Image (tube, rainbow, N blue to C red):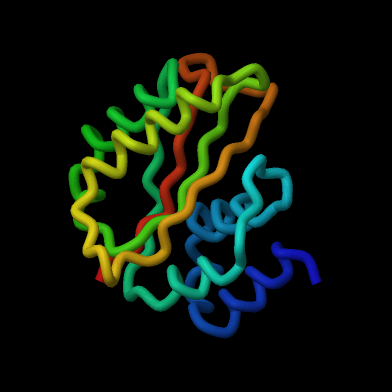
Length: 145
């Protein structure tokens, strides 16, 4: 069974109300679509679904770091998340080091409980299409209690 089917089954079993929240549902399916440059694990979704509230927060920019800074500025509540699955969309010719640096910035900003913060996973989708104003985007599926 592919990861999208596994994700759909988990959502239907544990959080069927997410089927009505199209942005969150579609972001979860994209996360597990199999086109990511870092392989995702379905176990991370089970951790996410255990939380009482799941929100999709997103931001764009001209770089990975600008996306992260915009995400933190636009959604200060992200620093209270209990876990997160996130993905970036970026140009085909991106620099992995810049992506990793943005993850360090995000990690430093989050108030993570070292023993209870789950899930924490990110991946990248390299795409050819972009919005007129953004070359990079970040999509964060955040778990709140």
